[in-house]
Length: 113
Length: 110
Figure (cartoon, each protein chain N blue to C red):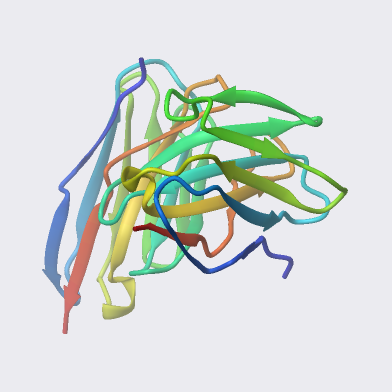
């Protein structure tokens, strides 16, 4: 069964550095998402992406964050000038349509030191 | 602003028992999703509920949606240890955002 893949599985970065989290969505899916989950807490929506542009973003997704789909397969989340509170699990998801369930990757655990 | 509340947040139960997890939401929506998460793992889609009165069943799990009451339930029948996980409901706010409940951590003891 096709799946969403995320790399790396764990990223450790010094505060103030930039990180890029990578995702390969399922190939025939059209909608792409990033979420984060701080340890032991609820899942929080960051951004959705459709037709090569952001379709919605949450208050969390400020100027520090950006997303790109640089080619036909990858979907990236860039976090500039990381802060300690950015430490979390970041999940990428994709779906074929707005109403069908989103398929999640295994996540990238981001640790900011 | 859409708010999603789940209860209970923690549930410990014996194998063989039945129980229900509740998901309330604050504003109109007709799309609700249930996901399962094992510790340290990703989120697995369980059910999609797209209309008032929708009921879906898979094995020992059954989910329903009452859009008038803004309530969804996830019912567990004759629980088994393998169902131990955290269960999340998520509601579509019709603005391309899924708003998530806090999750219900379910522990099923042999």
